[in-house]
Image (cartoon, rainbow, N blue to C red; front, side, top):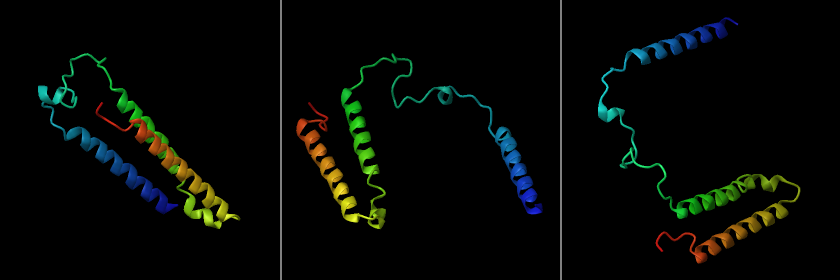
Length: 116
């Protein structure tokens, strides 16, 4: 119990010291360049409703779809410990074939093309 109290006191003290020092250290020199929002080189005072390319949205959805299906294959190395490892590897191969066919379909339909 004494060790736990010692560790608790040390962590609380260290946290308080770091929090207090973080408020004391920064210099309060406001600069107009530092106060302006960073907008990746664009004018931050422009319209917020600029046209958005649908290709970015399509690629993001495709990435999420394929990433989710690949995440389903992550427990595969432990599949040989099941009662029927052949069935597990059969279904994993089926998922990989479906993924490959989906990628080929998107490629042939031009879903991955940036230029028109």
